[in-house]
Amino acid sequence: MLRLLRLIFVVLLLSTSAYAEELLHPSEAFKPAVRALDGQTIELRFEIAKGYYLYREKFRFSAEPASITLGTPVLPKGTEKKDETFGKVEVFYDQVIIRIPVERNSSGKLPLTLNVTSQGCADAGVCYPPQKQALPLELPDPTSAPLKATESDESGRIARLLKNADLWLVVLSFFGFGLLLSLTPCVFPMIPILSGIIVGAGRQGHGVSHARGFALSLAYVVGMALTYAAVGIAAGMTGTLISTALQNAWVLGGFSLVFVVLSFSMFGFYDLQLPTFLQSKVSEEASHIKGGSLPGVAVMGVLSAIIVGPCVAAPLAGALLYIGQTGDALQGGLALFFMALGMGAPLLAVGLSAGTLLPKSGPWMEAVKKAFGVILLATAVWTISPLIPIAAQMVAWALLLTVPAIYLHALDPLPPHAKGWQRFWKGIGMIMLIAGAAMLIGALSGAKDLLQPLSGLRGGVQTSEINRLPFERIHSVAELDARIKASGRPVMLDFYADWCVSCKELERFTFSDARVHQKLAGWTLLQADVTANTEDDKALLARFKLFGPPGIIFFDAAGNEIDNVRIVGFLSADEFLATLSRIQ
Image (cartoon, rainbow, N blue to C red; front, top):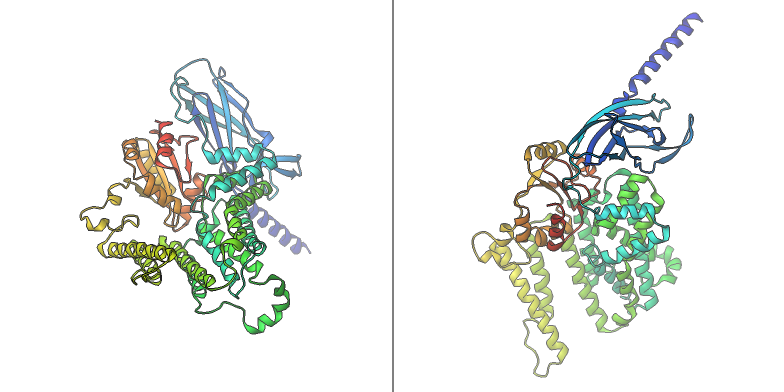
């Protein structure tokens, strides 16, 4: 018995030692960093290790020398927690940013020491005693012009809207954001997908009614909206954009293949339907939804939202930023859901007009089906284009323009008494044939711009290459910090990805502008290519609380981020120059 007790004591001692070794030292569990935002504001940032938290009400601040007076600290809302020691409290996980005003009557630079008292615990049930830390810093001259802009970036303002506004105001605002986003490339590729579904629903010889077309489009849009909400909430909670993981050759290639399969069914090569033994089992249930399966259309909406539309515009970034900071998944999820409904409003209009725009029966139905088959093929090319060379893209577009042009009788003579519509469609066919020929010539001549396929015939360096900004690529947080530190000049950091449509728009229409080149002449230009979504890419995005490209961050000559002027999403050259003028 004595030996057994000794053995138990040794085991308990060893397990206790092992447990103690697992706990982090307070300086590792709660890492503070302090900096001056301007001559009268201090920003204190705590990086909190996973499995640890800090109490919101336990923070205390003072400054040295004693003549310096601190204002009321501004702390964000914490996460509610039922604590065994203090009862119902607010705590901070992962990170907390606190702003502390400084009351001063003198000008010039002001060195000081910020004394911080904080207390935190581990989720394992162990609490640390209050920790006191002295953090030295220097406030700049308050009379000098501040580097930060007078108003916050758009995603930050949207995050504050979520935080402070009434729920119904949030819902209406994000529905409006969605309507604006419906005019961007985020939504355009979804229109031919839905249109093809509606046309396919009428291939049994009957038309598609208003009610049926609206029901199909509503199922598609609701599937898309639920996906945006779910993926957005998960992204906000995990600090990454899940759709970026799907932007690779296998997924995009597979989805493009789906479009090709759908398009060939429009051309009449085959009918897409369930096997006979399954049709017999579901025929009774499917009888009341003739012309297509609403759940199947909803699934197509889900896939389209994840793969075709991974846009990170300011409203989406703002909602994700709010979710990530507060953990309020309900309000953030509702905002994303209604934003997606706003994005889908044009798609609902497409479905509602089906009874008018799509013929009820006859040869026109076949013509419309084939037209949407071509549009689906165009969507397939657009989907896979970020991953294939420009020459291959040009060949694909050349085929897609030339073959339908021949079916439109572009090369056939018109009959003597041709009707107006015959002449019109032959004219369209001629334009498509010429455009297709230009694309093919461009591919053979080495052109680098889809919008200028004949530029390769000019010889020398092409315009699209001359106008590129001289970005220097960085690949990790450490490389970024080293490059900023060594720069000695203002720095612009651009987040880019091959699959990011808005990034391509920035390159083509904003960064190619001569005025932008002139304005950025004295800047160090860095670019983080996050196409592969590696761990280093994720760390770079997380460093700036970005959920995906495009995103542009600005730093002053001392290496500090210029607050409240970051750019999320596409800006035209004029809007971009207006942003630069606020910080120069």
